[in-house]
Image 1 (cartoon, one colour):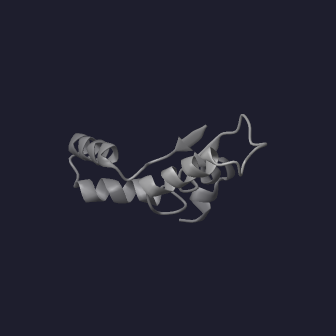
Image 2 (image 1 turned 90 degrees about the vertical axis):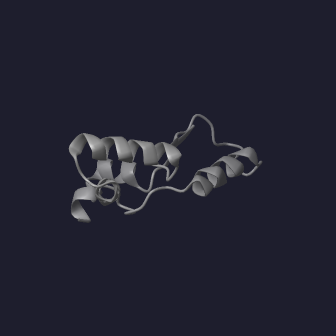
Image 3 (image 1 turned 30 degrees about the vertical axis):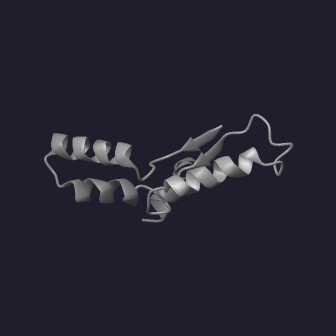
Length: 88
């Protein structure tokens, strides 16, 4: 199971626009806020998600079963370990 976080895509663009409008802020500010909460300080790209999917489609991971693969710019790791708060 591939678990992407914020992927830089039209769907994210729509979310950013909607959230910015609700808060009365510039969309660029909302994008920056979202990135600031991520240890990688950037959004995941569609190509990065595709690379994980392609790797899973090969015979390389034969014993990988029932695993969740976070593809989220280390957001999950930072949230679990408290890393996000430490790296600011």
